[in-house]
Length: 200
Image 1: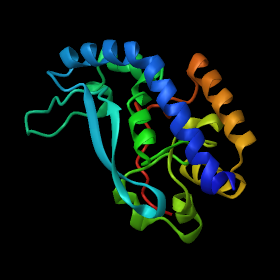
Image 2 (image 1 turned 120 degrees about the vertical axis):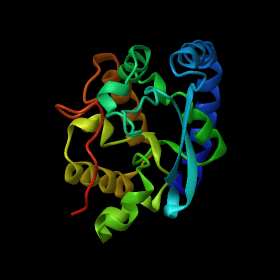
Image 3 (image 1 turned 30 degrees about the horizontal axis):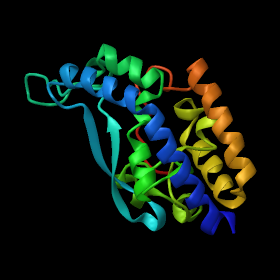
Image 4 (image 1 turned 90 degrees about the vertical axis):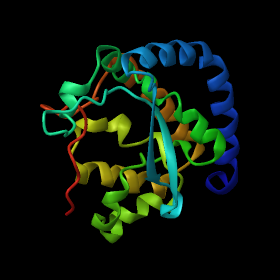
């Protein structure tokens, strides 16, 4: 009953209240990134949601669009701006995703929505992560975030899908707050973000 009905009600209510409370921070970060990213404070990207249905995820844009002499984007480390680094470290870049939750594209808690080019690379076990709405945070995020390996991440994602409950969601919310304050697992060692998934 919780997974099929009350979870969506919980998501909508908490996301709406959270967005209203965080609206001053939302405005300040938007202005800062507007100037840091040449008028582009937001990042939009198509991601797979529940049942692999595509939607546009909204995040704060923490990296600029600087390119090398051949016109190729520089790597993540060299495009991450100072304000972008702060926004990412404090997880403020996730605030716009509350809009995705309010719209029903996402949940507060669930497997993180990954890139669409990963879809053909999943095995049958890993595909189960799409049986519920993706989340802003999830079981994998509070157990290592980007610092854990892909196999570990998928194990955590599928475990959550199979064990989703109200009490588990509350636990993950509190653990997420703790992770934000101690800034754990933001990236893999030697990486600005998570390494690319190349399949099994």
